[in-house]
Amino acid sequence: MKGQISFMNNYKRIITLILSVSLLATLMVACGKQQEEVNSAGTWSKAPKMDIDTSKTYQAIFETNEGNFTIDLFAADAPGTVNNFIFLAKQHYYDGVTFHRIIEDFMIQGGDP
Image 1 (tube, helix red, strand yellow):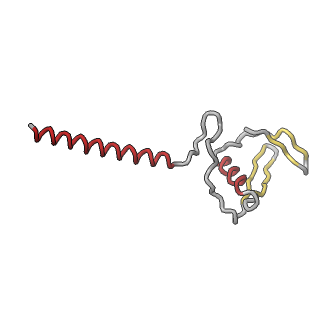
Image 2 (cartoon, one colour):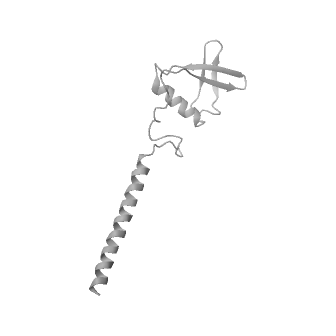
Image 3 (cartoon, helix red, strand yellow):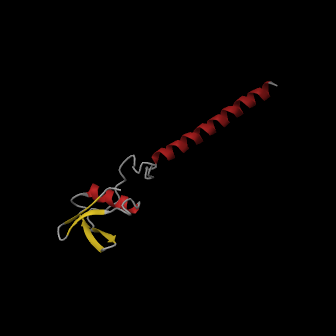
């Protein structure tokens, strides 16, 4: 009987240790992932990781019902802004945004989504 109790206590300790290590490993992996999912308010909890190469040239093509136009993105001069813009564009954040002010050969102004 004493041998059975000792075996059961050791067995419980081993199972508890295995479960604890598994839980810790799961938490470490989950906490290490970058938050890139949008919440219900349409915002993110932190800036996206830097994915652009500042030595490369980036452009954005805007498709409108009045025609398309292309802009240059200056990654070397504003790497954070370009990276954020590209991340948000890939998330379709700007889809459907209306340009409410257009001055030909000068500028356009659009609202935030």
